[in-house]
Image 1 (tube, rainbow, N blue to C red):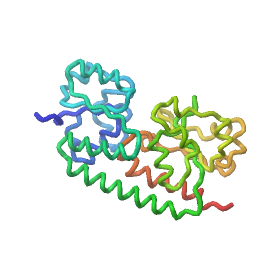
Image 2 (cartoon, rainbow, N blue to C red):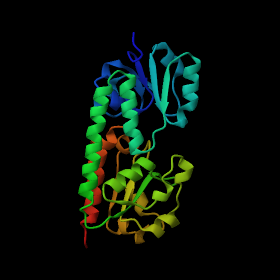
Image 3 (spheres, rainbow, N blue to C red):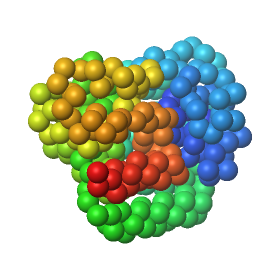
Image 4 (cartoon, rainbow, N blue to C red):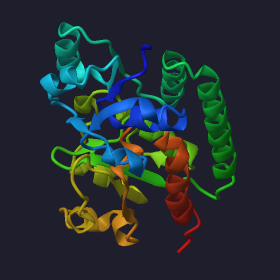
Length: 262
């Protein structure tokens, strides 16, 4: 049995990466929140993001457990304490996401496939930057990751917005930790975004609630009804989804606002 014969994925990005690397048969357990690819939703669910069924995971006898972020440090500690191999990463930028895919490729014996995949993603990112540079203007974007408290987008989201021709109004608050990304309505109104994206982790976005906030009627995005919900399964996981679908979706919205001269 090899190191990667029986893999449990505590978050979504590792699942999609393994499928793209042709290692889907190695996956024996996934997060309850997995959505990509749809085939993975039928795999055994063994974990939420901040809680996992440690006894069940141990009983499945995985050779490798994959996780993401410091938020999963307690889960990782328990699993390591039970004698399991655990690999947890903290990628926060697009460059780090690409490095993660290559690291995972080496870990599961698919280094060549991983490098080919990241080469394609780098080419797509470069092409998007070139295409977006031809837009007549750069719309100002507010990306809301959570509503109470208001949290702006993490670093990879900020980079995605910029690559697609937008200007993240909270680029100065796109740190790794949630507390670094907390904003308020006064700041949002003051920076007056042309676009508002709602992408709430774990619950659907109510765009009508956003537009009804006090003073938001004066925000350009609300006046033009440029409020859109984005999928957390694409934009809030630091993995292939950002490149596979995220770039194209983000660009389509930003382009619409950039070409609006009314």
